[in-house]
Amino acid sequence: MIVSQEASSSLIEIAQLTRQAARELAMLSAAARNDAIEAIAQALESMMPEILTANRADCQAAEAEGISKSLYARLKLDETKLQGAIAGVRDVGSLPDPVGKLEIHRQLDRGLILKRVSCPLGVLGVIFEARPDAVMQISSLAIKSGNGVILKGGKEAVRSCDALVKAIRLGLEKSDVSPNVVQLLTTREEISTLLKLDEYVDLIIPRGSNSFVRFVQENTRIPVLGHADGICHLYVDGAAEITKAVDITVDSKTQYPAACNAIETLLVHKSIAPDFLPLVAAALKSRNVELRGDDRAREIVEMLPATETDWATEYSDLILSIKIVDCLADAIAHINTFGSRHTDAIVTENNDAAKLFIAQVDAAGVYHNCSTRFADGYRYGFGAEVGISTQKMPPRGPVGLEGLVTYKYQLTGDGHIVESYSGKNAKSFDRQNLPLE
Ligand SMILES: NC(=O)C1=CN([C@@H]2O[C@H](COP(=O)(O)OP(=O)(O)OC[C@H]3O[C@@H](n4cnc5c(N)ncnc54)[C@H](OP(=O)(O)O)[C@@H]3O)[C@@H](O)[C@H]2O)C=CC1
Ligand SMILES: N[C@@H](CCC(=O)OP(=O)(O)O)C(=O)O
Image 1 (cartoon, rainbow, N blue to C red):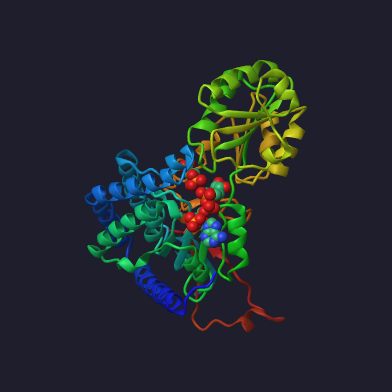
Image 2 (tube, rainbow, N blue to C red):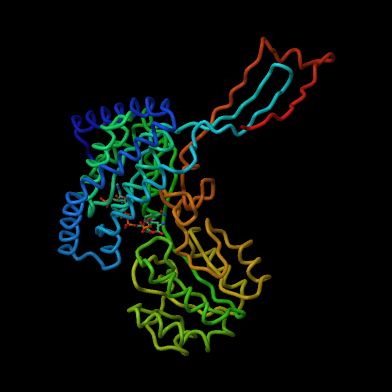
């Protein structure tokens, strides 16, 4: 993607402003950061009419473009959702301060004290899908953790993101935090330039498809925290309690079909299939879910045929593929082959089977007898989330404040040198742990 020199220069200026503002933010007290978050909440409340108008325009444009119902539900920011998101901003403000946490405090020797203290990363670049409520979650988490953030949302939400960031910056103007800590980009061309700004940006968080995350990883030297596909599974074991299994299946598929933590494939043990499948199929069809099954599933319930492609597809919609398996091992093998290491669940009353599933399924979230829709920073008690990391290296799963800070080792001596601890007359370390508060 070609970006004009002028556009590139202005983006570098934006990144420079953000870095400077982030450095100032990192020096502020927790109280000042919390006050800024409250100021943001108040500004969002005062600008609700403008935000709702902008979102209606986005929704109308998206409908004209033929957006699917489930992606429309994710794009829509009505008054209830907006009020909930503003409450979520305040929730972040009330979380414990992630900055300046004393994680190691050790006397290596008399007068030689080691500390490990948490500190902000610096400037975050977060590219996310057409989900306007993410703007408020990510911005509040960034400020709470002392970071600047350069945002870019999905094109369908461009008006909503613009109105939200305007409100956030208006709120910051009434605080000790510079409005420059929150910036908004709107085009893919700008992203291509942003990926080159490793001098100013400390972490890129792409929330999107595997191909998009890979595109980012291949086009930047900036560390990347990938929040990719959600090909999530629910396995109904032969020892499952059927009513529980039906309820969990319906919630995991239909509570928020566009969410990356909604299930895309249902695996069913052959022993329970004749009793379970008719019940769950009726429940799903009554909620307009299109079912696609393998041959054995289709012998029990009438549905469309599933193909090999279906096992690797994230529908992000009211579509569910169904496969019957002979045993737990086959279910685990299927998940570890076709899954995206996001969130996978088992329904069973056999605790040994559950333990084996939890131990052997390689995913950020491995659940027993509950809906995959619980994979969420707010629901985990993190206040909010920057997204759901599907990489193996931590932070993995829903990423809250702990994923947005790093740390420094601080060593204070009084003329100590290593030579004293070397050779035949070496002094010994005492390495006594000291209180962490
Ligand atoms: N793990 C998580 O937390 C999340 C995972 N996802 C996953 O992302 C997938 C797709 O979601 P979807 O809504 O389609 O989001 P997309 O992957 O289409 O887009 C996400 C963001 O990335 C941008 N983008 C995509 N491709 C490029 C590119 N080549 N260059 C620059 N920017 C790009 C989009 O910009 P533009 O709007 O211009 O296309 C958008 O801002 C799903 O699998 C979903 O599960 C989604 C959200 C969160
Ligand atoms: N944690 C979120 C899902 C993560 C997310 O943002 O996914 P998506 O709806 O694909 O943008 C939720 O449970 O709504």
